[in-house]
Image (cartoon, rainbow, N blue to C red; front, side, top):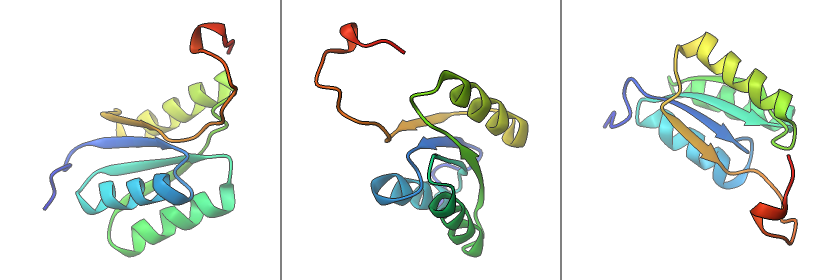
Length: 104
């Protein structure tokens, strides 16, 4: 249907589970996808699966707890595709406290 044609998505936690499903669905809908994850093996497998279906995807190493990884993932996505339209924050852990009490 190409509802996301000309869009670029960066999916944090895109290697497995819901994040992987997001990546595959967005690619099927025409988006270019940056699969961000710390799990490089599964992240690259997601990229391969997208490409096998004719989609466009890259893997970006992304540990969401590291500010430098975010800067690099964003820069790599923009270098590859020129922009980011969609950001999915699917990765993370529960710290058991409010965001106001959380540091970087």
